[in-house]
Image (cartoon, rainbow, N blue to C red):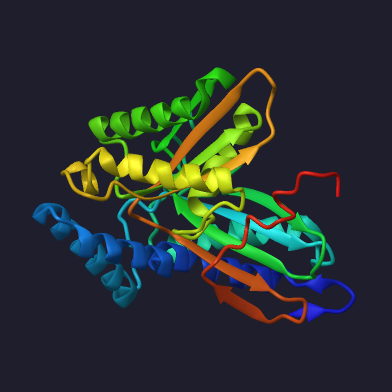
Length: 315
């Protein structure tokens, strides 16, 4: 499966992408199970506690039946992290072909909903593969000859919002936007709490959106940002979100947000772009590392936000 001269084979990439994509649809990661369990134990409202219990039951049944955990299987996407010394037989084109084939095959094999359609004609290829589909995002590390394939299934309609703040808005503006977002989505039924809220702060508008989704999907629940000011704001925002009392599925309860993760990027001196993405009760993610010798390791932690990924300097 691995050649010293050419690198990791396209077939191995396909097999790992297939398995990661399948696991993401079916198996709730352990940090999600723990967070839902903790929310269930501390919930004071009977109806909310009942629903949280059913979320936990559903997670067990999905694994037992080898079926997707949610009827709306969202939009499969991949995050790929590569060590600088990694080599692929066939290069990046082979990698992307493997990822696209994996999505098409998993869609058929475990009956993922074919959600991807042409935006105008509504033509549906039936396999979740098309123009710019699935999404594939990359990051790189200076050392290592491995490839991480992270599969995430996330809804592609609601759960994301954006606002341009000004420096004078400060943290109060961030809090106001969070509350406006939680209230509007709850009022209109546009999210399925309890959620993990990802906040992208700074950068350009498109960077804020990307960071918010990565923050929601690619950090373990309970993980804190290494910047103490950002970490303190994360704690404050999750407490604020839960004070809304919207609760599980909006029926009222103690837990509306399982966590809030913030990622920052240096931005224009005149503004503060902010975006929010919500990762709902269908908490879907799977992570695999392909080593240069062909060994494959599945793990819980995406390890996406490394020191190098968040670096400030040139190097």
